[in-house]
Structure formats: structure tokens, C-alpha cells
Length: 267
Image (cartoon, rainbow, N blue to C red; front, side, top):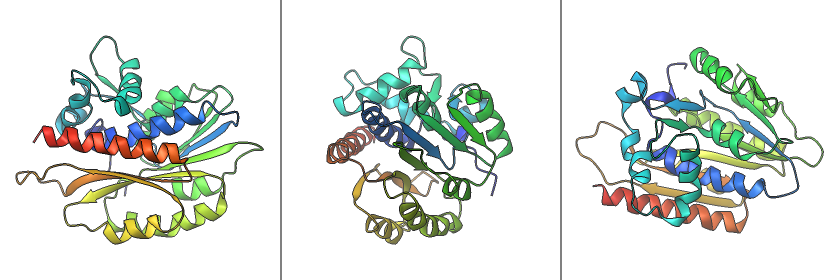
């Protein structure tokens, strides 16, 4: 399906947890000697104007990045991420929101490589406009699952793969169930990061348990208070991170705890 466009949801609560965890992981890797080969299977446009009609129509960012950046004292686990978002904006505003491609391009180094896959024509066009001039970046209009598996790290490179599908249909879950074991075997040294929505009806429970048992890593999840007036099927958000350090597992857990506390305050 090619209907999903993340611009309607940019900067929401799910983005806050996901991108705060990604910021910590890439920040740590950027201090290590090994170069990084960073891959996204569902990149979207990667950089979002929150004043655009699409973002205003969805208007999910005030409860996400908006709530975080308007805190008088931003909790320590979230400061690196908050500073990164502010680096894309002037003053204290947050009109521009960096998606994961922008976060990666900001944190990774000149000798690192980045590969972005995106099938949606409009999103691919915007992605190319935003990052096509970066010599480190390769952009492909192709299926991200198949395309990613065709890649291999160069000598000494540490591969990092982010999987962030729309989960519009049960087919998205089925595709991941088939793809993740292949990816873990294909890249035995790679860090693999998966965004997982948490639904009100718990439909992801069995799927999440299956993923958690595949390989060692960490799960950082947070739920927001139930809003009986909301039409959304979502109840929370989680990141599954394979093969990250224990220090990063702990940092991710603290990020999730902060998010849950912030969202509880807003209810």
C-alpha cells in the first residue's frame, strides 16, 4: 500500500520515543572507531515542516515534541534528543522536525554511509530533495525489505538497520515476521532497530513476544493514558533494539519511563 505519509503524524508521541532512542544509539556509535553503514527500510521524507497543511491536519505533534520542548526542565534522558531537534530550528521554536534520516545524517560522520529506501512517489521525491545532495547518502525507490537484504557492510563497518513501517494492515506484521529472522542471519553483527506500535486491543502482544525471543537486545515501551474520545487504535509505542550495549538498553528504558511520565501528566 502506498497511501501512508508520515507528515500527518510527524513529531507525535511515537516519534519522540523512537527518535530519542535512535539519538542515543547513533551518538554512542559515532564515538567508536568503526564506521557505520546505516540503513532505513521505510525512510519517508525524513524532514518535516510542522507548519505544513498536512502536519496541521494531523496535529499530533503538540502532544509529542511540543510537550517535551515546552517543559521548563527537560529530563536528562531526553536532553540530547531535544537539543538535536532544536538544532534544526532557530530560537525556541520547533517548526522543523527531523525524522530518522535527518537524525542519522546529523549524527553520523563523513566516513559513514547511509542508505534510504522509500516506495511512495511523493515521499521519495521529498526524501531525494532533502538528502540527495549528501555524498554519504544513497536513496532508492524500492521495497525496503528486499533492498536492505541486498546490502552488506564493508570491511570493519558496523551495520545499523531501522525498520519503521506504517503497520496499516496485518500484512505489515506478517512481512516483519518473515523478514527479521532473515536479517538477523544475514548480518550477524548488525544492530537492528524495530519500531512497534502498541494497540488498545493488544494485537501486537504475540508478535512482540516473538520478536523479543529472536535475539538478545532491549525493548523500550511506553503507553499513554486512554482517551475514550480518541478514534486512534494506538495505546503506546515501543522500540525493539537487537545487539545494543547494556548501557544503551538502560538508556532506552529511562527514555521510555520519562515518556510515560510526561504523557501521564498531560492527561
